[in-house]
Image (cartoon, rainbow, N blue to C red; front, side, top):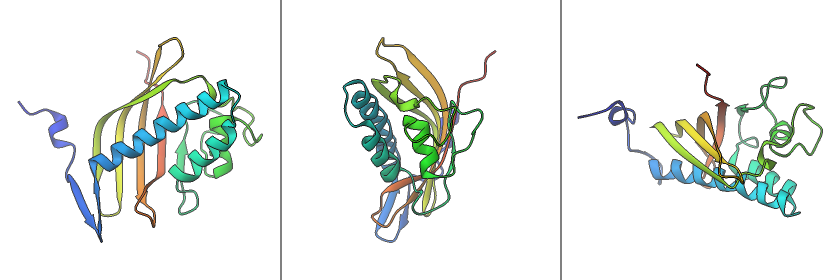
Amino acid sequence: MKTEKDFVLPFSQFELGDFVITVADVEDAQRKWGDGIVKIATAHSTGGNYVEIATRHVEHLYAYDLSQVLFKPTMASIDQFRPTFESALSYFVASNDVCDEDSGFAIKGWIAVRFENSGIIINESNAIAMGNYFFTDGDGNETKVEYTFGYILDDASNLRIVLHHSSLPASS
């Protein structure tokens, strides 16, 4: 029996010059994002340079240097949207006093991040993924968060985030 997930992905890949975006590329970008959150949290808890790691995380994975970025973080309610590199960095590590409400989402002690995609759409020069991701804390508790990520290709054929919307699931 076919399920809704069998019909979500209209293209498994789409050629763009010499580069082909695949589902595996999107999943790799997600893995890098999750690994980056864990690296930031680990550096914070062990006295490492977590701000530098977070800076590289945002620089390498988001496209602030290439495009407008639409970022709506999970735990942002006053400064809900983060259109600049500095405001995104503030959300992750609260190191630069850009948004007063920030306490550093990436320094909450996360030890694992895993993605469960509901669907991935790949077009000529971009990809969109939506689903749930799960953040595991040091006690083994998972926090479920809903997400939509949009990616574009940079000049080195790396997927970079131009859309990131996260929210906690609605309560019943």
